[in-house]
Image (cartoon, rainbow, N blue to C red; front, side):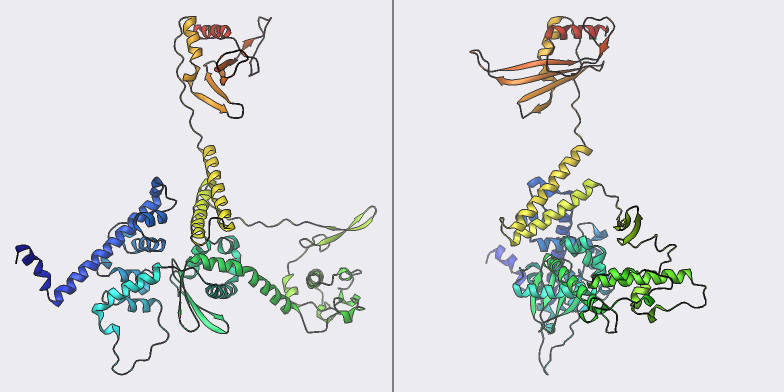
Length: 583
């Protein structure tokens, strides 16, 4: 047997304890690698280094260069942020050095209190139970063995299972979409006011709503929610980078990108809105007998004069409409009228009670209109018609109200906001292209939005940071007319000022110290009427300061750009006088 073969036989003779120690060291090395990869991915993302190779995002870069899926890249960056030294380094924090990759992967979703419960000797399944306790224990038969009885084989199996579950996000089927819609409907009803406070970002914008929902309802809280579907109870788990559905029979249905839940919330908004309107209408209906001209059986019913405060000679209730909305508005008018009367007679011994009059005003409407009014006739409610006296008679006019606009203050500049929105739009486009073809109308619309934002950013950047004009060459000392003519003919050395693409003309300029400007209009390769080859033609236009008017000795003016050009002879004389200091 050769010496090489003898040296390689060492691994065949290690004992159980040594094998366990080697496995532990290998796993720790894997963990350190994932923490380091996550750090450098974060660094490339923050510096936008991926753009140097033409990638639109760090996720496109990671998948193309290394085959790392988007969900995996997100998770590794999150693991680096949570478990690295100082939260931003390629090194694993010493407090987690005894944990393996699959353990840290499960610990990623634990809050600070739950993390304190985790020990290095715990299995992945035990860590997962801290996050989502299993409500139902499987029935155990006497003497039945469990995989937990063999912890030495568990880490590899658990790691493989965790990787398969979390990395492979699925496209929802029609049945899954029904479950997402059912949860979205339930979630909206419970947290309606929260969504209503910022409808644009929490409902309409499917890129920002997942972030805001996670911040409000997931961080440090139970991430499992139960909802009804087909008279059964299903559940959903809201993790950081995906959502997980479980059927009413406790069967795993798959992991899905947050985008699909956000889209379900957006689509269910109108459904829940209509349900709330219908519910409010039903609640406002009363079973008590009320004089309501909207009811067919009360078509001859007229409001009684006794239903108004004493001294009220006319009542606008005679003009009420028949719809539920008009009737509700009429109640508000009555409530405001009675509140005004009570305010004026608050010190009187006895005030008639409005609940004893011919029309009943719901108590919530009376409580709603409680603000004191100095003069009811002069301060109408918002958008309410008022009666005004005019020379030709009495007219009813609408008084437009000033809307109270909400303002959210931010120190971000317009270009900062545009860049953030462009990044969101590009991420959304990337998600769309994974599910739909390039000709899909949603993809095409998103491409237009991305392009429009990019154009806006470019235009705004040109305004905020205009390119600096190239430094103008110093006018040399021209000692004779030949040198002056040569300088004029070398106008291209000044640098192109701008070009008119519409008429194919180039413009060059030179600014003199006295404020005058010489503009050269160049017409490249123009055809001539005579039999000669095309050639460049140029004409001089001197925008001279203090030019003397013809036929005068003391009248001057500032010459502006006109059609007619200045001759080379005039310009030579101008340069001579300029450098002699006579101008």
